[in-house]
Length: 403
Image 1 (tube, rainbow, N blue to C red):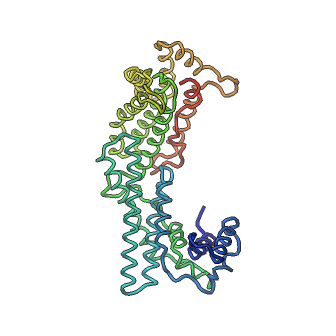
Image 2: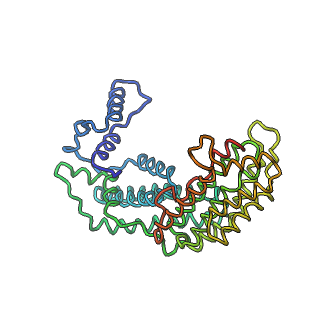
Image 3: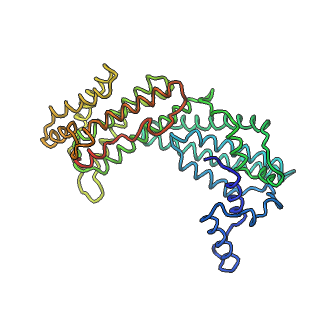
């Protein structure tokens, strides 16, 4: 939802109503009462309290509030909203720089601009570092690759700042006479910049990775993170219950690489690190869970790779992930030493218990088909449009019931 005038009024009022909770007096009680009232009814007549029409805003910056906003968006950053996160950092920086330059002079101007550089450098670096660190952990990539992704993010933000600075020069916002205070409300002005600007560039000339690379890498990382969590929380680690889902993620990765949506750099990184992700699954399976003395030994990495290779071989020959998953399931049934595994894979292909949802195999089939539709709709596009592009793939019904 776009940031509008009512949001600006509420935030401006909140900045003015800083409450010192260490005090116990009537003034503090009154401020808390008013703030709680606004939280419960954000459309209340806040203009009456703040008198913005008459007093306006003086252009001063609540730096702790700025850092808090940056931290909040950093914590929420993922592949789906990466574009919006870059946009937010860059537009807020440009809006703040413009506001400070318009409302300050002399040494105060220099001091406030220096403060902006300090806060922005710290918080934008924290965002880029946090995002790259999460990719490193989930994808099993090297420190060097993670650092390169962090640098690429920083370069995309820098480029976006230049875009917004160009927009700022020609941006003409129409405001009523009693709304001129909004020009000194950086959140509102940043929102206007975002509304007026063109799309985030897909890449930076000097960056190793594109925006699409970093978005899709996050989607793949999220899928594997779900796999790690499922293995960690599972019961007996029969290898056969933990191979088809990573195979499906990797077939999607191969399809992305072949589609041209990913750069050559990212395609190489994701393919070269697949083995690291598989070993991470085995490592988690062989780690004793909390409260247990000894790790479960049912997970066999050689068996995992045997099944996985057969699935990927079919995919490489045919390009059909559904046939590859079917072949993997049938191979498991034929070669499993455990009757429990054989029985559960009969159930995997058979209708579900209530007979209404169809085979559990259909969960994989439907997932791949949805991915294909998403891929076709995005040929030539720079980023995924929803998390549905690479969803969290673990078939929890199957694993939770039988692992």
